[in-house]
Amino acid sequence: MGKTGMGKAGMGKAGILSESSPGAAPKRKKLNSCSLLAAWKSGCAGAFGPIVFPSRMWGMAAQGQKPLGLASTRNEPLSLASTWNEPLGLASTWTEPLGLASTWNEPLGLASTWTEPLGLASTRNEPLGLASTWNEPLSLASTWTEPLGLASTWNEPLGLASTWTEPLGLASTWNEPLGLASTWTEPLSLASTRNEPLGLASTRNEPLGLASTWNEPLGLASTWNEPLGLASTRNEPLGLASTRNEPLGLASTWNEPLGLASTRNEPLGLASTWNEPLSLASTWTEPLGLASTWNEPLSLEFLPNIPSIPAPPPAQGSHCLCPVPPSLVPSPSPAGSSEGGG
Image 1: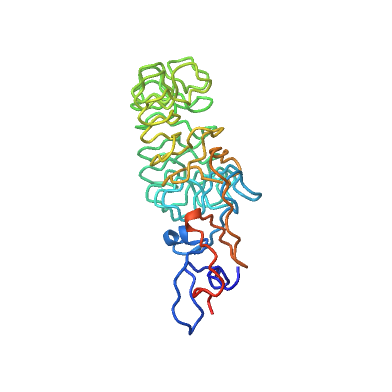
Image 2 (image 1 turned 30 degrees about the horizontal axis):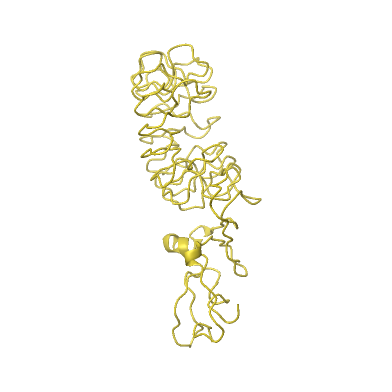
């Protein structure tokens, strides 16, 4: 490379922009491999330590990545995944504004710490605390005074069955095997009997209570024309794929506005474009993509027509291996250029 802007001065351990040597005339600043994300994250070494990124931009993950490819870096504004050591990569750091997961030691990473403003997996007394206090087997059961407690009191086998007086109890009374089937008088019970307005479950004989009848307004396992139908047309094996034009269809076809299994460029697209095996990997410009863009172990093969772009080599001792688009990779300066760094 010679004495170019990509030398030691340009690839410092935590620097965002390369600077000239002290005492020399100011040189033109160049972008290094961390500047794309560092401008947003205020440097590659955040308040909680260095941010470790994958070393390859496309393809599957290298060894040591997240178990289920759902973990983010840290400091993501709404990242539903965690930092690095969660068993299912669903727990967040601890300062996430809407962090749906916990700090670090929950068995399934679904119970939060205690100070999350909207932590859907909170401790106790959370306004929307979807999770329990601290000792639930699957961290999905709430205490007993939650206004929207999606889980039960304390002794349900999977912590998903409510007591019987919960206003939005997503589960049943007390003896359901998986706590997903309700009684019949729940106002919005997501696992209802037959005519519930949000009935996530079916009429009466569904094996796992996830398939609806056919006319539920928000039926998460609908037949074919549901406005929010999280399930598919008919005859789907697990009823998770939608038809094609659902407004919030979690497994849509191509043009969903919030399609959680969207095509490309969806604002909240939780899933990828079309060729992912499990539709859990996002594209790469998703602002809230719950799945990652590249290099997650189950982040599910990217589009086959995207060329492989190798990341630039890291600086000595640098922990930041940020992939950079080709347009931002600095070109080598000619020998003797004014950017040589002296």
